[in-house]
Length: 267
Image (tube, rainbow, N blue to C red; front, side, top):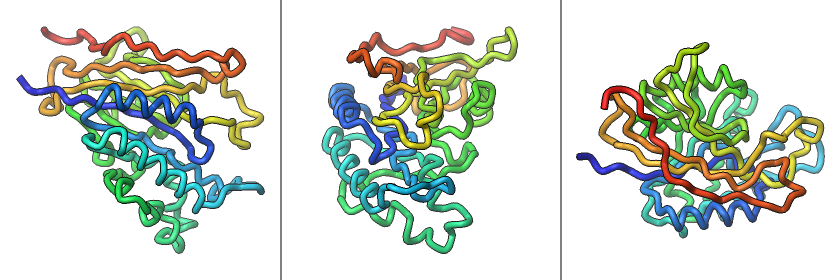
C-alpha cells in the first residue's frame, strides 16, 4: 500500500497587508501538522503599485519583497523538512503583464529573494492549464482564476481529475470540501478553499462587501501514486481561524476534526 503524503495549503497573504497574528497562527499549525508538502496558493505579494487602478500612498515593491522574504524564511524555519510550492496568483502575475514586459526582469520577485531559505520554493506560473497546476495524486493545486461559484466548479472539472480534489484560493472565501453538482446530479469532483490571511481591508475593497472573507488553511493527505482511479484516495479539512464579519467579536475558531474523504465509487 502506498504511503500517503501529507500537505498544508494557505493563500492570499497579500504582504504587506497581511495579518501578523494570522501568520503566527499559520506557523503554529505548520509546526503541529508537520506536512510533507507546503503549498502557497499565490498572492503572497500585493503589488498594488502595479495595478492599473493604483492610487497614491502605495507600498514600494522593495518593501513588499522584503516582507515576503522574511515570511518565507519564517515558514522554512517552522518546517525545514517540507517540500515547498509557490503557485503564482494574479497579483504576482501583474509584474509579467504585456504592458510591463520591458521591466519584467527588474520587477520579477524571484530575482529579489535575498534569504537562502526563500530560494527553496518551487514556482508555478499563473496560467490556466493542468500543466501549470501542482498535484499530489488526485489533489490539484492552483491559485484560482474566477470568483463565481459556477466558474469555480468548472475549474475543478477542467483542471482536476475524476474523484479528485481541487484546492484553490483567489476568492478569499474559505469553505470546507464541496462536491461539484450539475443541477441535481452529483459529479465526482470536489473543491476546497482556505480563504486568506490578509489583515486590514485594502483601499480597493473599502466600498465592497467582504463579509464572506475569512482566514484559514487547508490540511490533507493523498496517495501520490494514484492520479487516476475509481475512488477517492485523499482526505482534506479546512481549519478556520475567523471570518471577516467576526472582526468586532474578538473570537477565533481553530477546531480540527480530522480529514474528510468522500465515499464515492466502488469500495
